[in-house]
Amino acid sequence: MSDGIIDPKLLLRSEVSNMVPIKVGAKYNAFAEVKNKLNTEPLRLGANENPYGPSPLVVQAIQKNLAEVHRYPDNTCYELSEKMAAFHGVDPGRLMFDCGSESIMAKLINYCIKPGDKILSFSPSFPFIDIIAQAAGAELISLPHEDDLTFSTEKFCDALANGVRYVYLCMPNNPTGTYFTGPELEKILNAAHPETLFILDEAYVEFALGKLDYPNTRKILEAVRQPYISLRTMSKAYALAGMRIGYAITYCEEFTALLKPGPVFNVGLLTLEAAMAALEDKDHLERYINIVSSERTRVEKELKSLGIRFFNSAGNFTCLSLPTLEQAQSIETELQNVGIFVKGQKGRNNEGVVRITIGRPEDNDRVLESLAVN
Image (cartoon, rainbow, N blue to C red; front, side, top):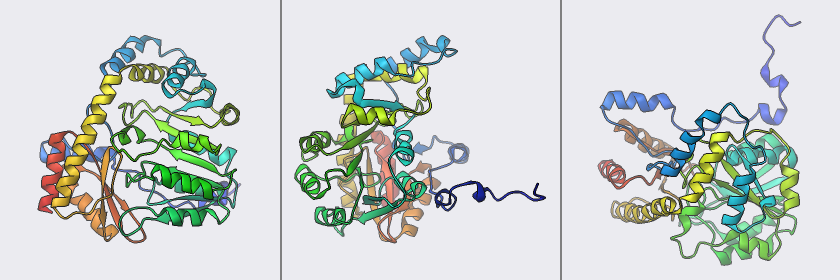
């Protein structure tokens, strides 16, 4: 028996013990501190939450089933699978559900990605892919954007020639909101190996409907029989962030079946009921998407008039481009000092970005006024 405390790193795989911590957002006590200090409700525009809340049908479904929380949920998610399959026009067997799409992503560490495998992605992109790569001992190839704030199709294709086993394609990309068009995606697929798995992170795809050149990614991949897993969430457009429900659509039932083994009751009873109710209220979803599209256009017009550079976003957020990370962090701090929470993070190389959720019109006005002062 040791006299001292055992170094925890000795108990972990080396890939995990050497992982670099990633910023996950504001601590919740910061919201209360700002409220007390400024005597006003803080604007939470750093996590891309739906500020209008869930459909009334969701609230009703939760209230109706409160007395049943002593029962385990349906671990097959049968009814939700049937409804979601009909919504997407796929066989239910190609769907799987979990407590957030990140949980499904995490399965790729155990079931797919091996040490030394190469994963191609954007820079910047959703930081969880960094965790996935590090934990699996894989090599992450992060393609930086160009000076015009777009990603080069040609460079992406060139990178594929280096033995890439997985492509993490976050579209709309988080945090930039950018995307490849249909022709660009087809060019990438022509350069990809037939066995390369495309990991499509489509958490924000509902907000891309107003972009006429936004592709139907699954349709394009299926046309060339490219293996893929499409990761979706009900946190953003459906306003179920607090319920934790994500799902995946894969290219075939056999692949889904191989990924399913794991914890049995990851999706709670109330979450299942909330998700099914949210799917039913198409009008609630459409109203929010239309507001985001209209407000995003208005915000971008104002940003342009202020001389602020931003990416062409198809998400429910806009993303500012700053010359340095320090400048991005400075804007984040200055906005927080006036009660506005946004997310500043590392961009390309030593550059910085600030991702700002498209809120209600009055919220966006406050953001624009503050940016104009700064």
